[in-house]
Image 1 (cartoon, rainbow, N blue to C red):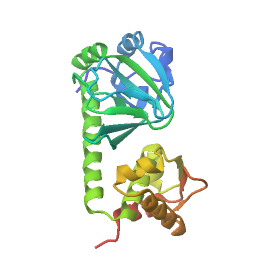
Image 2 (cartoon, rainbow, N blue to C red):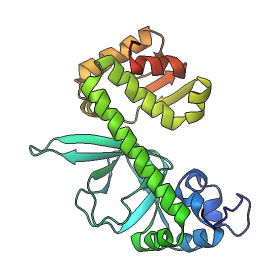
Image 3 (cartoon, rainbow, N blue to C red):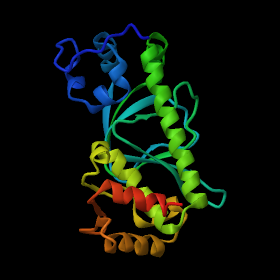
Image 4 (cartoon, one colour):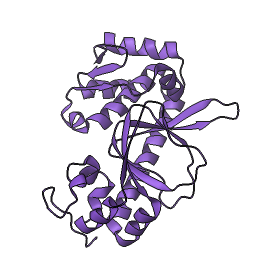
Length: 247
């Protein structure tokens, strides 16, 4: 077990810039002591990226890592014929980067307006070696991303078009408000991808995505106040639509 004790949100030793940061409490930085946060804060820089702005290019040398403070980031690969395939999404307060990796394996782009807090790779690598709990958190996020990738393999390989679209909305809603899932409550969010990107991500056509969204609305699983806004009235019903018929 780590000997590093977590500091209270109001502890005066915690750098002011870190006290109200979501990544400080729910992300990897929650594993750091006040002293380690102070050291990291000396090297941090906050950036804001507009929609579609590149953060990192596939093959770039990794010089900095980052925590996502707000917004959604998409990970993409280019196919041999120049087409983009989205292979993953990341949300606040996810850690953005590949610890101890030498270069990026994806194009990293802002799916929405994105704010990040970045820091030098060498600084975090040093803290990882000092702090077993930080290693654990980074490992846990890696495993979460692996589980999500396996879920998408199942969705793309076995699920119907309607189940894929419902699965995508459930995935987004679960990241936006995981507490609503526990109480089968309501959650509202903006779809972070354009219809064309959503279709590519799900292996469907734009027309099919639109048709399945309409079916979910007609079945009163979701409401669609506008083209990008989704209101999930009940998590349980959306989960059932994503899982498909029992038996």
